[in-house]
Image (cartoon, rainbow, N blue to C red; front, side, top):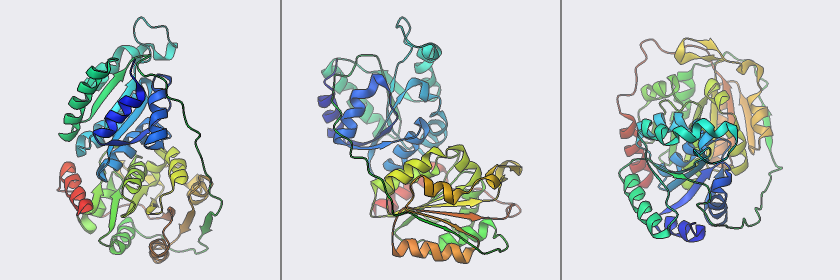
Amino acid sequence: MLNTQEFGTALKGLGFDFYSGVPCSFLKYLINYAINDCDYVMAANEGDAVATAAGAYLGGKKSVVLMQNSGLTNATSPITSLNYSFQLPVLGFVSLRGEPGLSDEPQHELMGQITGEMLSLMEVEWEYLAQDMEEAKTQLDRANKAIENNKAFFFVVKKGTFGEVSLKPQNLTSTFSKELKHTTADLAMPTRTEALTTISNLADNNTIMLATTGKTGRELFEVEDKSNNLYMVGSMGCISSMALGLALARPDKKVIAIDGDGAALMRMGNLATNGYYQPKNLLHVLLDNNVHDSTGGQATISHNIDFALTAHATGYPAAISVASVEELSDEILAWKADPKATFIHLKISQGSPEKLGRPTVKPFEVKERLMQFIQG
């Protein structure tokens, strides 16, 4: 059994001090250590945790994700299309529930047999974490070298690996000064390009823009390709999680997450996570055209949802619905003048420019130049 405090200190000595994850009984003492002694984001699910950690890495933080192996299936999308495509490494600890020969709940039986195989198929380097401290520290050195080479690395953790760490009292806070504002205007809906042009024109040299997957990123690239832009590929629904990690890691930068209705619906749990941590430098803009535009225009159910009210209910200090690019501009300027975690919802028209291209910069190149922008 490992002394968890000593193990955590070794991790911190290698620079790993930002964690995100979800509960797991096998990892509970490492989770307790992370909450007690490091920056820890309580994610709504495993995929969100991976995206949050990736965002923190963009901001210069070596990051760790913690999850049960059943949740590894939830994290496969960001692991394979965010971490892999952008070469955004994270260090993972995944428990081995359902280990063959170990009595466990029936839902863990299959995952206990295929956890390592799944990681290998996703081209994630991994090892079983040793229960001897010196051997474990040697493993950490190998894992750190993988991270420094832009490769994700996961430890598979067996039952009883970590020694007890008591959880210190968590001083959870709530915000009561929330602003909810709906427009009363009845205007023609702008195009996505018009909305993106407005946002891009207001982004100064201290602002990072992260655009969700599909036509949002593609159109932003055509509006204006800048080193402070990131165009998400895959990882649908993860843009606000990634923005959260980046905003927490770099409070000196303004971070704008540009979302879509289909993507936001896919991972709505992160609205609550953003609403709890609410970094002042985070602006979450949702462009809502009520369809999956990138896949042929199939309808979403966004017409049945009040997104601003939902963001308000989940804790965003400011949740606003606007009806025009002029109102969008006014609210962005208000956020810049009085920073607080803000959600803006804008209905846009369906469709996109004819012969819409794709970014000509590869995802890992987008990541590299963005990190240079951030560090500069």
